[in-house]
Length: 296
Ligand code: ADP
Image 1: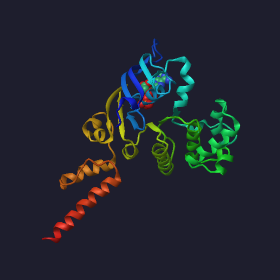
Image 2: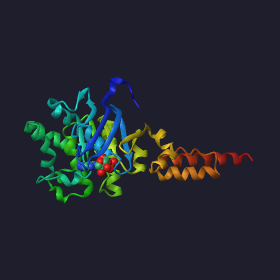
Image 3: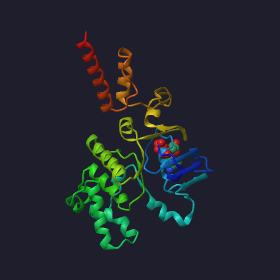
């Protein structure tokens, strides 16, 4: 984590938020949240359903405003009325089922929509749409098609392109894998990874799959009952199996296998969170065993 203050891009200070405040249906969804996000991070937010993840990320671009505390994006308070447009430009938010929110006649027009709303001249719009389509792996044929003719994964990529075309510094995604098959999910996460690596886009996403979180995120934040209960590197958070289990959360399946294997093979490292690392760890020990057998 690059926690140098100059890289701080979003700060939440004592943020609380209650839905239907002052009514019998009031529901506190965020309770005194303090968090800082830094540029170029790749952060996953995890937690049980109802723990406050969606509410939290909607605070990051000012879609929801805290009723206590403050959210600062590049030092600007999200409650500042004058900065709303800038804020949405800086922080691109992709909703959970964004693939069902495409509404234009063609995919091209859908991606172009935000540029028209921002009065970007036509000659610049075309290049930006084409560049963004390429970034997310949509072809010219896809661009000419109706959104309804795309696969679920392509629709999702079109929805993300509609946000990316506005060149946000920070990309926030709520459950990007929702509604996608494993193939579509893999493709999407590798696109997000490329954006993070090549465009140096800061990524903050909500995810359910611990496998995906372990594979991609560098930082993991855990919400429970509207509060942040864990925040650290991937290894720090997934290394604390006991606390995650207490919170009703899982660790990647491969980690559970490594923990079990360690019982009969104490030489193995069980702080392993991805299949490729598990493979490497197991092969390393097989090789060592083979070598030591050669000298017997
Ligand atoms: P998560 O994304 O972790 O599932 P949410 O942020 O969606 O959690 O919800 C946090 C809490 O706020 C839940 O108890 C949920 O029922 C409640 N909530 C979410 N949206 C609304 C809403 N529009 N009106 C009232 N309560 C809501």
